[in-house]
Length: 242
Ligand code: NDP
Image (tube, rainbow, N blue to C red; front, side):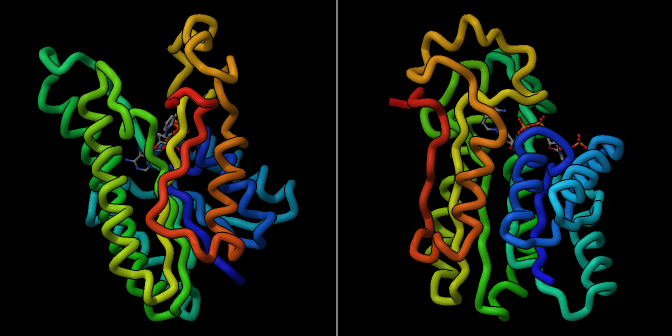
């Protein structure tokens, strides 16, 4: 069996990626922080698509929880190697920097940036030993161009882009690739408070994207077909960045 871990797989983009990974014949470890009901729903959708999976609850921003959950899973699955990691878990806490409190800053950095670090570090050694791996980091348009009200989120996503490029150079020789996907506005819980009717006029394709449209690109990067792509950032934003 081949194993993939999707952080924040309970909802939104992470759910769409988890389901799409079935087409690559991965057994999917669905990570989530608290929303078990939604995580179980993702698992059910994986099964309906003909695949298999399981839940793996931990808070990506807590290094003890990350290490304990992954060590516990590895203990029960001794010969298994998680060869695909999708660092997708993320939150936003938008506020103008002049009003930003410490927790707005630290919560967003801890989840979006530190979470990437803790989970990747925990899985990387096995990928290197196995001489195969695919790491895909879900970043954002906000990390490429910066968006007002998101200094915390833009900083976290831009940092993950930097780390993607650095890590790609560290591990390329071991046949482990690491890339980033930068969505624009995608219809999920994260964007449900945004006014699509108003914002879509700025988007060349004139609409928000669907989670499945991000999942397509992520799963291409997770496949063997993407064997010569590493350190890259691919935008899925309806043309908004240009
Ligand atoms: P959602 O808010 O719909 O889902 C967030 C997911 O992340 C949930 O599964 C949630 O778990 C999980 N999560 C949040 N914090 C943690 C944590 N500390 N530990 C473990 N899991 C956690 O978000 P989206 O699907 O919209 O976003 C997914 C990724 O895409 C994020 O990184 C986001 O920044 C990025 N992105 C999204 C865009 C959009 O327009 N939607 C645009 C650009 C980037 P639980 O259900 O348990 O709460």
